[in-house]
Length: 82
Image (cartoon, rainbow, N blue to C red):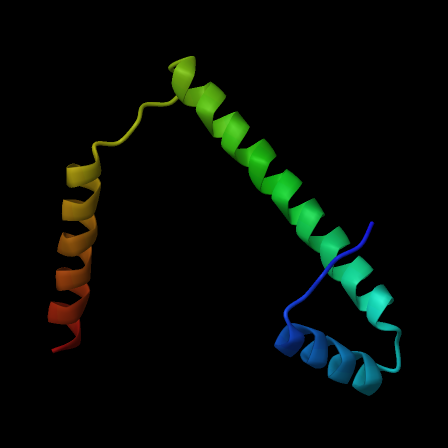
């Protein structure tokens, strides 16, 4: 597989590899491995949350109500600092 980067990204990668004393390919491999692992974890978490909502094991929040609660808590914190 070939990966093509914009020139500025290629330059930054080369500089970082030189500073780290590693080959640019190793840095890209490590970065992609970490990214793919994180992506899989997020996907699993989203799937789990969706399943919980769909099966009614948890109740969804009304968006307007959730934002109103956040605004209220924020205002209470600010008032407590005064």
